[in-house]
Amino acid sequence: MELADGEVQTAIRYLRYYGGLADKLEGRSIPRGANLVDYTVRSPFGVSAQIVPWNGPLELTARSLACAIATGNSVVVKSPELAPLSGVELARACETAGLPAGAVNVLTGYGQTAGQALIEHPDVRHIVFTGSITTGRMVLKTAADRIVPCIMELGGKSAAVVYSDADLDCVVEAVRVGTFLNAGQNCNNLTRLIVERSIADKLVERVRVCVEGLSVGPGRENCDITPLISQNQRQGVERACQTALSQGARLVTGGTAHSERSGYFMAATVFADVARDSNLFQQEVFGPVLAVTTFDNPGMAVNLANDTVHGLAAGVFTRDIDRALWTADRLWAGQVYVNGWYVGGVETPFGGINQSGYGREKGQEALDGYVQTRNVGIRLSQPPSGN
Image (tube, rainbow, N blue to C red; front, side):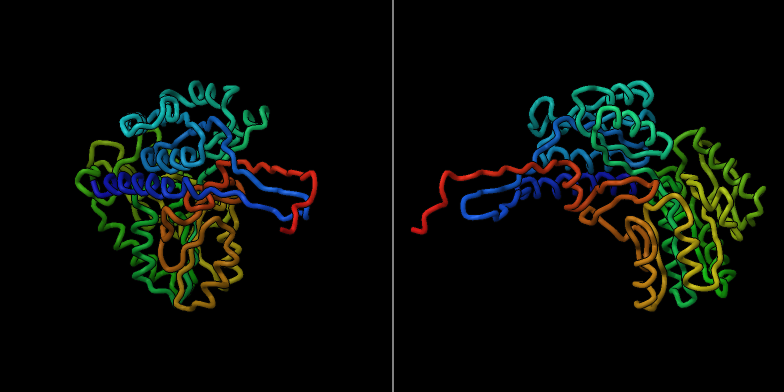
């Protein structure tokens, strides 16, 4: 319930935050000489098609919807087939609040039918997509045919570099929240620990004790490990664990479905000795699974952290501020967390680099992706008088 309530509160925060910015989208005047007046206008695209994922459907719908409305676009949301109801209720709330008819629209259905029809529609002039790299490529191919601009958030394989001087209590808490919140079904969750070799055994043991103490059950009971979204999702996580074992990773805890609970529960899982060329190191699992790999020097740590096609989030844990800044500057990710996880907020820009996507959500920077800048230049018939 706490997580669900937090999603509602964050959705409200997005609406209020971007509502407050709606009248601050200003152009600029460009000085070009005595007989010229030149200025820019930030104009909406028109219809913004928004394909929302199932792992935070209310919050993520509000995130992109609020930006689109604040910048004067209308919105058609394709709600996720596995979690469609919150989007429908948000549309009803928008109607009750008095938004004009047609400003906010919600389309339910499957991605390959309803979603594809939406992004192919000739009236759609802007696309926002959050989901997998595979589906994102398909969206981009369709958008490229019609030259439609996109904002793409395509998941990650986020790593935290842990130096030997780190506060291990802080690291364990970051794992508890960053890896296992929402059963690991967050695009920017902490999936890889890159740990200095001298403290690796100690940290892994502390993580194991924490993980094995996590409660398992439904969200309404405020349990730490909640169910995965579907049977198919759990089967994919189980396959990833089996592959990790076959590729030489050492299972510390978990690794299987929770047989004690009915539902799609997966045991909180930790693997150590994960090789950099293994599937678990390289590929997103989207479940409660942590991979631990060791390093011997800072250069090696950064190289390991950056050695995936992703680039959504990263982290560093150290008491040395110079080392923290040195590492943060070299971690190739859209956002870097220092001595914590999920350190950002509604006000801070969020998005990926590399194959984690492009464009930004959250913060004032997000508004730039929902407008197109046009320029107006006026030549005066004669220079203005000096009077």
